[in-house]
Image 1: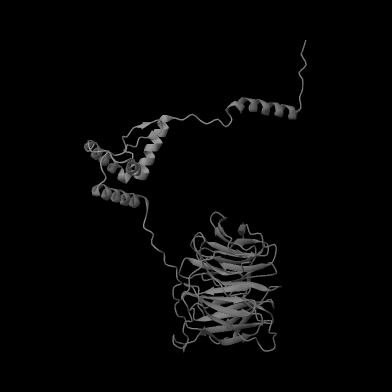
Image 2: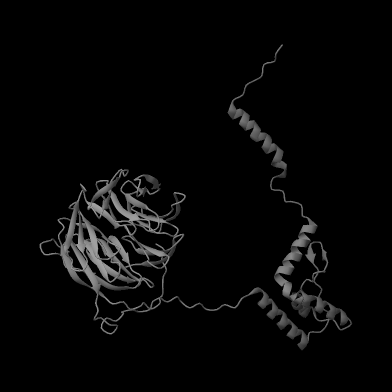
Length: 469
């Protein structure tokens, strides 16, 4: 005959289990642990050695000295009490009932004893404290003098906003892309139009000329990435894959790949010859506004409207580090030609970073506008261009803003049409080309007549308050 088993609910079973555990441990609850005399003794010895190690030998010497003079007259109680603080536990001193036996010295206090007290105090101070040296406030180093830049040529020819610029390796001509869907090639020496390339069906947003092949690469808001053969002046390859507008393009300096980025929140790596989309660098959560490539690690750097800059390991296809210091959309990047550093530009700040992990160096504050583009030369001049048409020039090492300029708007254009969308130094770094919203291309050069006396550095040393945000 089988016996029926009473089935209980889960709540009842859990409650019974809790009660059993409670009954088991209730007797020991909050009870102090028994003391282990050996452990206590070891702990005291370790503490004595760590805190009083340099002066423990003095305690032993004092003990011997007091034993030698044990026949001397006893000292008054008040002095004995004050002198007990001089007795320090020796390494071999015994303990009874968990307390250190401190024996009052029996000799009379004299000049020698007072001198010993001073020596003991000095040794304790030397062992446990370090001298406090007042720190000098960090002062911003004096910026290097740079000649001011001046506008010397304005080129008009585009029928829409000029959005991008690229120089060819020989420094004879440069190309610009515009909202009028054309790519125009200009002679750098005289500023005359050499060629117009048509093929895009929307704004051209990115251009780059290959130093290894006779190719010009372009990308635009029509999602197209094109490869132009400069010997035949026609498109020879298309790279299909972007899901939305393509905003920037760059070539890897040592391997035949190009990287594009755009509004689909990704950067795509393409094989130049096979047109294959080798890799899609995904991780940004908003439009990727700019991309730069270099031969050293990290090989790809992207800036996005999600307020982050990402450094990518191209071999692994993963993010190496994410820089989250910016508070606003990051629209521009600039790599230093000779140093292992780069800059990122956003409306809140322009920030300097150090490769390979993106260590923060300093802020360049003062360009209070939407920074659209950055350019940096090996002389340590950083140039930033903004949506309101202002161009600021900075000393790279100190972050000092030594020149602010705003070019006059092309006659016939509205004053509001003065944004700077792209800029680049030529290969010799003696010319600066800016692409603007008044449909013109402006070329700047250094003022050759300027000297340190005529254009002094208006700089006052100040305490550096290093902000990360």
